[in-house]
Image (cartoon, rainbow, N blue to C red; front, top):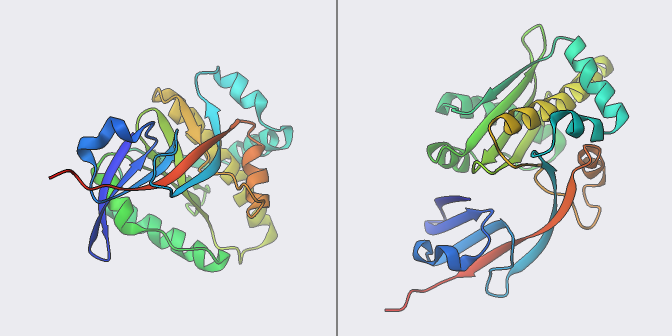
Length: 237
């Protein structure tokens, strides 16, 4: 479970990840409380059912790998043969966060998606809930970077960015292999840290991200339903 406090337009907001019940944390509630991937609906009529993909890390590592689609397993091995190296940063510095945001925001501009929320990443870092991971080529180029959050039980993908799309086809193929291998590296590292689940950070319920969903589902985890909710709360005077 993760609890962070932030502000939007000067309004204080509590943000909770992976909580089972609002009743468990009532003493920590403020006026506006946002629940992300809660087990149960907790909001005041503002609940959104979502889907995500979880890898059960309590399984044997070989079993988890064998469950991955054959083509993905091949690409992961090819990334290793191409001397892709991986970095798993459990204690990212502010400099590391700035570097990640610069890389990701360049990707986001090319991909037409929103930029990273640097303020939130810095808050997560202060709470020791942020992980940054990188796949790097043998010539030192950063090919893929991920930001993840963890409460010790679950490791969840928050942002995934890759080298700009305006590269040669050969590089695009290598980047695709590196991305798959980086996910596998994160699964292995999460298991080694005794986490129970690796979370791919959401699967669309309306096929709005069909290609991304297909990529995630190739890792063959368990698709589960959770809830995003908003809870407005005023303590009794």
